[in-house]
Length: 324
Ligand SMILES: Nc1nc2c(c(=O)[nH]1)N[C@H]1C(S)=C(S)[C@@H](COP(=O)(O)OP(=O)(O)OC[C@H]3O[C@@H](n4cnc5c(N)ncnc54)[C@H](O)[C@@H]3O)O[C@H]1N2
Ligand code: MOO
Image 1 (cartoon, rainbow, N blue to C red):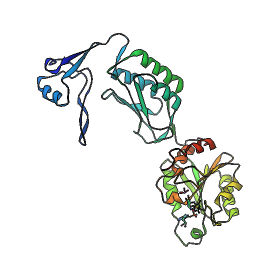
Image 2: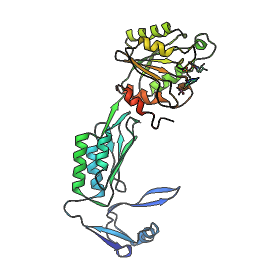
Image 3: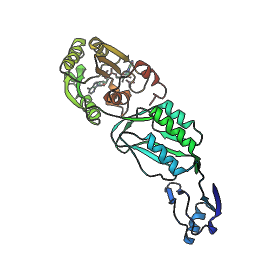
Image 4: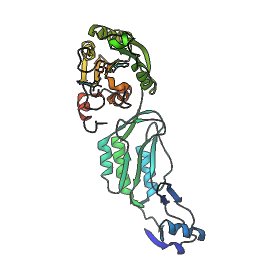
């Protein structure tokens, strides 16, 4: 049960929840903390943030304070490689304790948010998380909430394992740079450093970079050789579009046991190819990867490094929102 008391009459009473001050462009946060005992000197400040009344709470059985509801939900939604802090203004934030790939059971999250008065708000599935990055913020909407709603959230969370973080594998990657202009020294290679930096971010490394021309057989042989040497992944660069000298897709196809897709419904990065030679992933990277900061490669590389196999159906789904 909650009772309203005028602030002038509330001196000596404990605040039942955090109170928020927002000054646009300057500050948004806690002005008063739950449990604070109201002093006469607080009254002008309370009135300034629009509080003429405060609640005095007397929780009945089966009713939870917003902070306790949030903490209970965080305890079941959190899991391996996750951490959270104390509630602020009724909200708890789950954070990642490692660098990894966030997997969200979207159906489980939907079921939880279908429980009235509950909000669990997450990053999108397949987001790359660095140490300390937020996974989700969660809260009960009212100041007090029926415990049975939190029980239901706990049940769904246990059954669906809503959030998982997959650490990245450390892979040894063979890089094959195609293009007569690079082989013949007409231009300086820019792909090597870009690919190396993208791999190193996830703790993987370039085993070796081979500079080959545009001949299908040379590119195919280089892929087969890396595979025989035990590379975990091969990345071919350039030669992915429609010119007569763009022969990389044909060479990847010749070396692969499975082509997942040549072409992605994403821009930039629409000419990317993903294939496998047995279990070894092979990427064909189009020229845009040396120019654009984020392409389809930046979306698929973390998936592959997390040990996931990407299907053609998932690639087809990328079209919605794929225009970057
Ligand atoms: N008519 C069409 N034009 C283009 C298409 C298409 O479908 N039809 N696709 C476009 C897309 S999308 C991309 S992305 C680009 C690039 O595709 P490629 O992978 O074939 O790129 P290249 O032709 O090999 O090279 C383009 C450009 O980049 C330079 N390059 C390549 N490799 C390196 C390297 N290792 N270091 C430095 N510079 C490199 C190369 O010299 C060219 O200047 O095609 C669109 N066009
Ligand atoms: O593979 Mo291309 O940019 O879509 O930029």
